[in-house]
Length: 308
Image 1: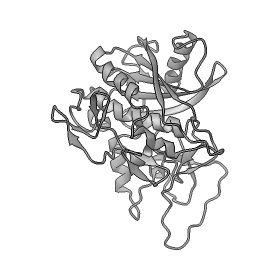
Image 2: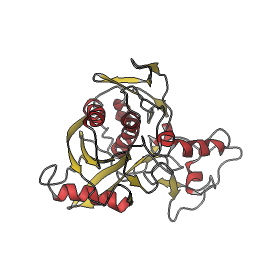
Image 3: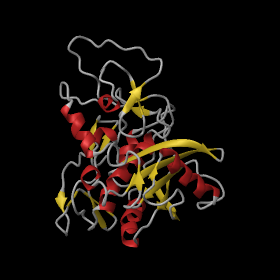
Image 4: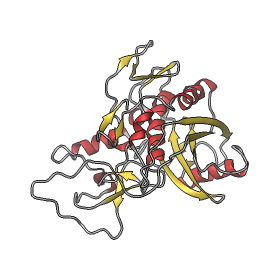
C-alpha cells in the first residue's frame, strides 16, 4: 500500500481523470501492460508489446482475473509482533483480525473468484500470534524485504504456529513504532507477497507502526477512534493487505492494466464517515470497536465500496 504522499503524487499526474500507478514505478507510457508488485504500484509485464488504444480512448480501470489463484478457503491470520509492543496497542489489531471475517466490508471480496469460478468465501479466522524481539538487529537497523521474510521463516522454523506452514494462512509481520524498514513511510505503508517456505507457498505481509516516524504518510488522523495514532492507522493498512492477499496472493490473479490490486484502487478512500465517541472519524464498527478503514474495490460493481 503506497503512502498518502505517493497518492498525492499520483493524483497530480492524473490524465483524463485517471491516475496511473505506472507513474509510481517510473513508467509513464499508458500503453504498457503492468503487473502488481504488492506495494501499491505496477511494473511492466516482461515480453508484453505495447497496445494501441482507440482514438480518444481512456485506459480501462476495470480489475480482471489474470489466471492466478485466489484463497477459496477461510483466511487464517497469524501475527508476528516484531519489536516492542504495548498490550493495549496490540488489542486494537487483534480485535480487528478477530472481527473482520464475515463482515459486510470483507464480504466485498466474495465478488472475486478463480478460473474455475469458485468465489472467495469471505470468512476469516484469527489463529494467534508470536513475538520476535529484534531478531534482525536493533530497532535502528533498516530492515530489508529479505529480513521480513527471514522473520516469517524463523517463526515457521520455531513451529510458532504449528508443525507446518498453513497454505491458507496469511502471516503478518507487524513492526513496532521504533523499528525502521527501508521504504516504509516514504514509498509504502505496507505490502504483501508470497514465497516458498518449508515446501509451502506462504503468503505474508509487512505493516509498520507509523506513530513515531511517519504519522503523516501512513495515517489519516492524529488520533484514531480507539485512541491510538499507530494501531488505528495500521488497521486500515492491515485490511488493505488482507484483501489483496485474498484476491491476489501470488501477484498473478486480480489486478488492472496499471498493476493495481483491489486495495490499491481504493487506497486512502474512506467513503462515508461518522464521529466515534472520542471525536475521531470512523466508518465501520467491527465487534465492539470503531475503525476508519479504506474502502475496497468490488469486482462486481467495479467501484470502491464499504460493504458488499
